[in-house]
Length: 506
Ligand code: 3UK
Image (cartoon, rainbow, N blue to C red):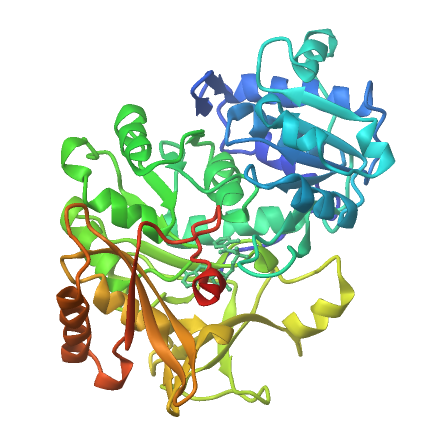
């Protein structure tokens, strides 16, 4: 078990920037506009912290909305907010004024630090009065935050916070409904750095982390900022998040650890040939189910056995995963050291191996909603209920089936969409697919597949029959898609999750 002991007074930003593993001359953050060593990052963070407490007049515990693509400057702003004893409220770059307004009001933000290229949407947002009067822009020469930096002292003494003071309010991306705000302590940040990266990744100072999840998504915040800092390694922050940009960047920056969603691994596997990925050691997938078919194609393309991990904003980061010879076909893995998991039935009683039920997890991090009522739905007897339908085997491996709400019930059969998706992804004509339950008078629901074809393949009634036969041959015939629809692309969130509700609404 990792030793998760931290002093009662702890500021995690200072803890990371001044950590034992940090070499001031080593590259900390790399981006399109330049690279910073640890010494340069620390100075930048300190100057921004002075702006927050000086010109912006913020006080300990105030909340700062942060907004920007993944860049070293965005990362420095997040760290500065925390180092200054304030609470970071990072927001996804693609959010619109309506969603931003809801977040800003729920989190009662006192100020805004926003990238200049996202300024229009930010200015169109209804904000609490204090925040509206306290906004700075960054990311280009001469923007208001950058203008203030040279006049600030180069050193800032971290604000002395308690290990259990809130430092981060992270909003769920929410495939449905309004985003929920989750609160995390300084200690939680250190905990996630000392769990997954140590036990599963075994990351070290010479690692170069790269990937696509936004820093406003805790998958990205951990994988692309907190984890590398904790071991004194380098993180590459990319603004352009396409599969070819990521492949090119892995080659250019000689990256060793990649964090991204299953879709991107699927797309990258098809085009790896033109790139030199010889430095890459670890490929971490999270955000949604990793189909076995995707795992296999990435292995074929790169020789790398992917690390799947399920995490949640409520839990801050990954809690079930496996690497190396611990990887089992079809399984996410086992609870990572420090965490426990079990499967509960509808009444909250544990079920044995081989029975599908509700995933429950417990560990050093856990759900704290801003919103009290939902807290009671998520946390039950100290167990966090993630909303996922899972199954365990006799050796304690956990197998994802579907979101609890997405289980398809057709003529009395329970069918998990992701299982059908995994089969369809093995068909040479299929690039992407999403399988949902569609309301049906006779069967309650029928299985409906939404398929994106590979380039050059044309939709046809014959192809529909072929895909249906293909599924029937590989899994129980009652699971085959009675309806098949062809789309140009699938609706996804910024975090790579399929928006099944949009497919259902079509
Ligand atoms: C689903 C997965 C199957 C699952 C996240 C890593 O995704 C993250 O957080 P969110 O709050 O969503 C949580 C939900 O997403 N999910 C995530 N990973 C997997 N399903 N296999 C997976 N590997 O439904 C979960 O309840 O957006 C992921 C780290 C930090 C995160 N916040």
